[in-house]
Image 1: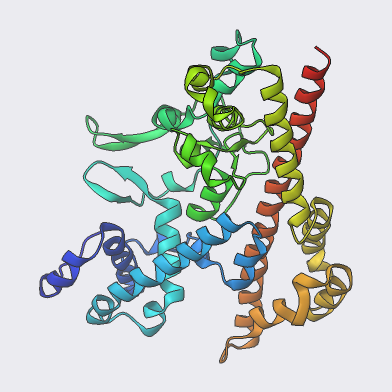
Image 2 (image 1 turned 180 degrees about the horizontal axis):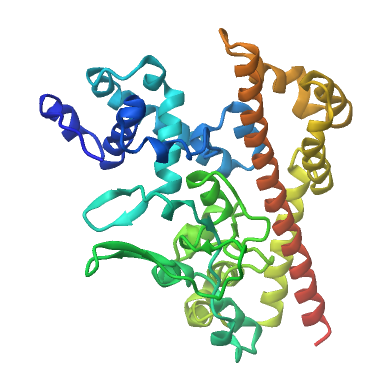
Length: 403
């Protein structure tokens, strides 16, 4: 998809490839039926629930600081890129609706969630039909770890996804045939959905780039607040200090905490044990597990809602279709959940745009509720992993205490 913009060359040179692609997409949409891509455009989603589309209500519903920050950063970045490209879009005489930030978010969502990698343009490409495959999370081959017996060696399974994401993808551009090729890694039955792996993503990353999340994501990573001195003692990047989806602390997190829990005068002499992933002593291991367990327990208690409340809220959102109107649903939800529905936040967010007709308000409300539900689901999964970590730490403590 290319357009001739010689008179706008200075503006083009100041834009990122992704911004240029976004403008190109809106330019083609502006052509309507005259665009050769029009049949393809008709099959694209009308909206996306990527983080850049989140409003204040959905953002705060995430509840966890680093997730809220990720959403705010995505929105700020999208607005900045839209403002940078606005002059160019006006020069191209795009129709007023296509000049709006809402249109930019739609185009951004299309490119973020549907583009495929190509070697000659970092913005990627849109591949009709090829970009309609839904996502299947990649997992490591369990056979490669079947001989791991020691508890500390289990942690060696962590962090490998970063290095093997290319191997775990199911498609790619092949220069020898000048085509994008997809490969099925299993035999599919007639009528069965074909799922492809795009690479390894946490649920927050899936939400940021694709607008969905997985209830059982093997690549999920949950981060808990750590003291500054713990980071200063660690040689690993912050993103490697996490809790796995099954509740087990990552290899790097355990190494860092074992070293932190060691008296300063002994750290130099036993540092090699910590960095190799070996427990330093039974007492050290129990201390670390107790610290993680207490930290996770305090984290859950500080949350505005509990795991059970979030489960009930997701169930209530799913029941919304049974109500005659949104106000009736909000009234019942407020009686049950209170805070999150205080001052009619949902109604204000849904009906707070002047000039919208009733149909537009209904569409906007549906989009808002979809994003809000995703936020509640994300925080529920976060808390579930934290709760699993508490159980995991308790089991390890009990096991070590009986030895």
